[in-house]
Length: 224
Ligand code: ADE
Image 1: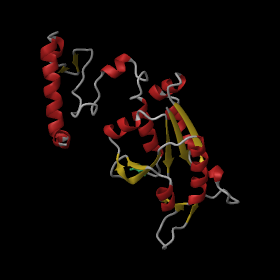
Image 2: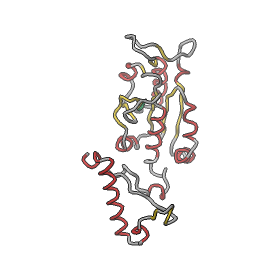
Image 3: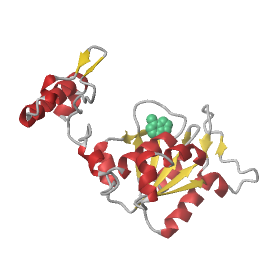
Image 4: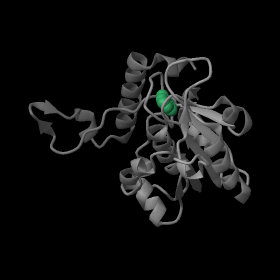
């Protein structure tokens, strides 16, 4: 899978792309990430990409021209969905990630400052996604969350041990609490059932713990 990322801050991705599962997926050639700084597409003499919004509102707007030219260049290769990250988008969740896991290529557009010119959204963007109900300085962190979440759904990216740890949200409930050695730590013992070797009882315990945690913290997941 290829992620084409359009950002004014491509350096923001370097630590992320060099670490952990995404780095391994890249080195195994299961994932490819291509970073494009759309400032380089600006026809403006000073490569300026933002301007004051019409209407006299505060803040700045990313102009349509550099983003449009960068997108058209990328889309000349082959068609691909264009996702714009914005707090105005639909909320990113596991279902949304799953819906993108089968694509060969997606284009991820990261804004900065205020928003990008609406005409880019009308002309080129096929989906708008938000990380949550808060405002970040740009879409870069959301693009990283998206790439991480989608990559680990691609068959072969996770090793057996990693994928066996049934994640919260791959099932409709939150995950259950996890324990490892030592049995007792700072006076707190691991639940006895986990050391019992009784697989049926352990599975029941995990189910009940997940249910209780979900009820307490995310009752919306049980009713959706
Ligand atoms: N850009 C700024 N805030 C954002 C958010 N909450 N989600 C996605 N992209 C964003």
